[in-house]
Image (cartoon, rainbow, N blue to C red; front, side, top):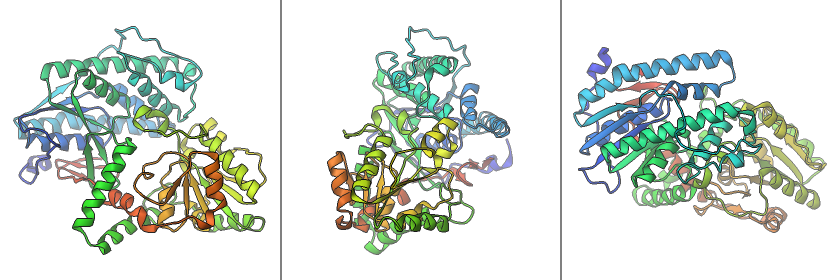
Length: 500
């Protein structure tokens, strides 16, 4: 063990208290995802709850297959190989140095490791290997479709395509199913052996996490979820999954109400405004989806359309793959359209009837998807002369388009709430993480509402300060790390040991 870890002590570490949990509780923390900072956060959560509660079990579930799955998402073979060895090295340090040090520092922490197994399905599972990922989501195991959703999530991430064909990935799907069963079985064994009061797991969207969730529900064990926040120096831990938009917005409002009691209005304005400004104008060297975009190219597009149309509407698309893998966690309202492209067509049709110009800005992240997904969006032909589609890889500035447009339309993406801060009327045609916080966002659910909002865009109210609960939450919410020192979004020190 190197000197940096020997020097690290728990003297400056504060206990982490979980909501309404007795001190005599036994807690099991499942390690399911092989990426820093998630590993580091799991270590910190384990150590800090050990200072408060009777017994903590750290359950290491990572195998080579997890590393393979993460690395496969990188299509560049050289980068994929580099990532593979980087992750292997990190996990080696974790098992050889960090976990032994953790046990040495805390007598009430026990570390258990999932044994390597031959992933053979021991249950009769009917895998629906059709042409539709929707059918794959219906695959049931032990009475629920958590397995089907997790397999679909893995497949969408692997293929980088929200409309992937399961029939083209038969062996992969079988491997995912086999591994899910083994993860679930191991979790059941752990829960039966230790009889924990609660369990803790990362995020809840990924395959291993869903196996943990299903096992805990089977054994009636409460679950807490930990997740990163918008601030790399903080993390969040809660009783709901981070993609539960209804619960998230309730917490957002409660956090805002407390802040109004504790801080002056000037402080709230400054913190909230700075959050939006940093999104639009990131610090030098920080890579974002918009950091390489050019304002002058956007102005050229806008000026050309303004020569023909007095009113310009911009539709900012959202990346669909994550949403496609969430299942019922992301509560969805009923809309008259069933897809984002159908929503875009409706807006284009309405704009043409009103004599408005429409710009469709394809989300920059689509450029990282598979070829068919990119073509599907970048070469979208809506059949309307008043519509201009900006490709995902284009350098056209999204923020300049927003600034120069009369109205912003989204499918739930963050730029919808950003637009409110920058004084632009904003319509969302799908559920979002900000549509229930009182912001002046116009959530259209019918074609008639879309027509009404677009037609009267000059009269739509925009209250800049109504966006502040969202921004303040993003900027300030979370618990500060005390054992993990992030260097950036990917590297950092845990317990004094650099995992780079």
